Length: 260
Image 1 (cartoon, rainbow, N blue to C red):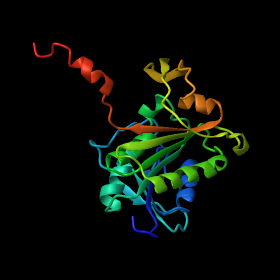
Image 2 (image 1 turned 60 degrees about the vertical axis):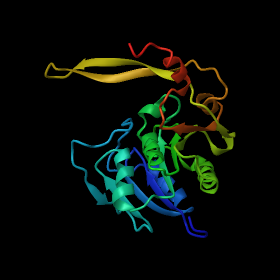
Image 3 (image 1 turned 180 degrees about the vertical axis):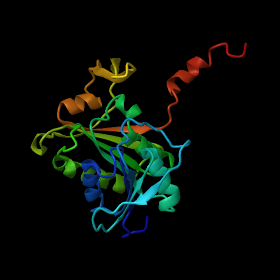
Image 4 (image 1 turned 180 degrees about the horizontal axis):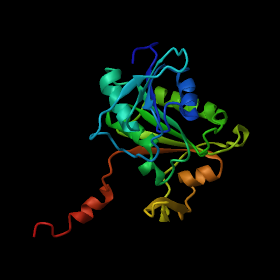
């Protein structure tokens, strides 16, 4: 990036282009660079790394107000949004991709299902430094103003220091008043999981249908995890990567008799 030239910042999310969280993130990003927004036209939560291959994609410029930046809404997923931005709209790699701010936590195992983080990971695959932001408040009217100072500071640090190739940041913010936020902690992902059940019901026509329900269980007692940080009013940052190789198991796997 040339000296004194503003960075090009791509902003996306999974809650849809009108969500309160992305509007807050756009406002912050606009203070730090030239912003282009490409986001789903409707909520796409828990889509993970899904892409659209069996349906057509539609792209439309989104104009809700007289912005100084361009905004586009897409009929697909968060990952579709990043792909479309990179290869159809921008024509070059942005200097940074910001995803969020999500309405709800993406800590621990939730990162696997998250459309917010999958958009950030897709940017990482493209060689773009990326951050996924989530606020631990699922309300559509969540108050994002309490965390804007921290969000801006983290973005500034990434722009200043850069990112290792293939690494993206998963940032989760506790639901707390600004004066109660204790700071930022670099963490590992907690070893937690969902105990899931299906709530079976019957519609008026006698046909069964199901709602996925469950309870989040965290048996990880470590004080270096994202779950511990959030429970203690710290903002958690987990460096995340798209390489899913279990490197520690390669040497043991090589002792197996796999050639027989």
